Image 1 (spheres, rainbow, N blue to C red):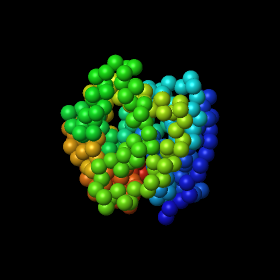
Image 2: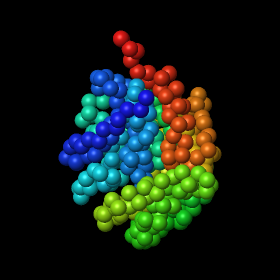
Image 3: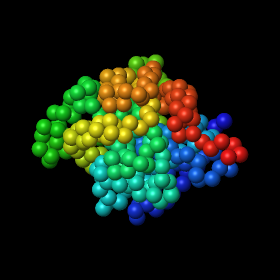
Image 4: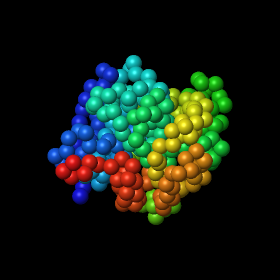
Amino acid sequence: MPVPVHHRRRTVGGVDVFYREARPPGVSPDAPVVLLPHGYPCSSYEFRDYMRHLGEHWRLLAPDFPGCGYSATPEDFDYDFDGFSRFLEDFVDALGVDRFALYLHDFGTWIGLRLALRHPDRIAALIVQNGDIYEDVLGPKYASLKEVWQMERAEGLAQLRPFVSREHFRDEFLNDVRPTVAERIPPDLWELHWTMMTEQRRENAARIIYDLKDNLRWFPRYQAWLRAHRPPTLILWGPQDGYMPAESGSAWLRDLPQAEFHLLDAGHWLLETSLTEAVDLSRDFLARVHPPPREGA
């Protein structure tokens, strides 16, 4: 049965942070946790419905990163993957969460894995959904970014700034899904998130996109971590994705051959169009590898 999603604020590392929380009614904060770091150009909004349906048995936590969604945009924050990863660690520490299943999607994949690299003992399981860490199978939409990454930083940022636009947001959310799937992706995604883009946030976005080229050098480290620790893993993949096609999803099986792999009739934002399948597969997986306490236990 769906549960309410609560909308909360908390100061984390001096930053006013907005986050969403769903949890079993009447259950202590010790219920097993699922941590949901969001992707770009989104916020915790992407998990709003997923949380309602899994919150009956798990405590789900989805923060808006600094400079995203309803969280503050401090000038002195490090808006890079290390900065976001440190924030994510500070966030779970502030809420007294020690161990959790980690949902990896889009930018949240690299942010979450950097946290896992530092604290492998805290990771109970992974749910991977359209997050790429294999350079040889990046999709064709990366071609224009690779051209920008060849430029010096100032020139590259000048090319990227106009790219951060309402039209770009729409393209990011629709991506390469076929028309019948696109009809099920609400325009709220790009309209809502574009209204939150201040001048500082637009500049931050351009810098983060340019710095993606440095993140590629982390890919072998992420892969080595998977081989070393072999966390229980569920892979949910929307292959209608110009950045991360089906091959980007199956590549995870190179380092996690035991992972459960599912291709859904969806694209990059599959929780908008394949929510029921994603919830059912997640619930079954989590019940086995990160189970809630038995009633009366």
